[in-house]
Length: 84
View 1 (cartoon, helix red, strand yellow):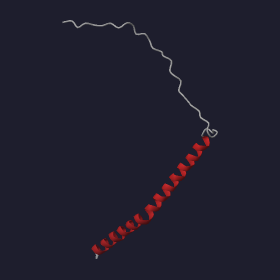
View 2 (view 1 turned 30 degrees about the vertical axis):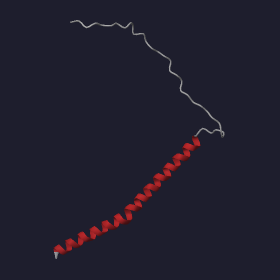
View 3 (view 1 turned 45 degrees about the vertical axis):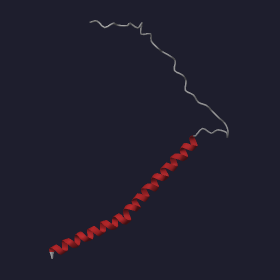
């Protein structure tokens, strides 16, 4: 009788876990992905709102300033000869 009871308990736990995986886990993932989607959409709206408004056809070229050459004179180059 004890073995049958243990097997019945394991069977109930197995099927409960199977039902949990079939119905609850997808629901949790769906909720999480919906939340991430809404978060990303909100970020995109914020980013578009902060974008630099320009008239249609307006072109602006942005370039970086060229660095000033701060080259230090290290002296003259000395050629060495190999001594045997």
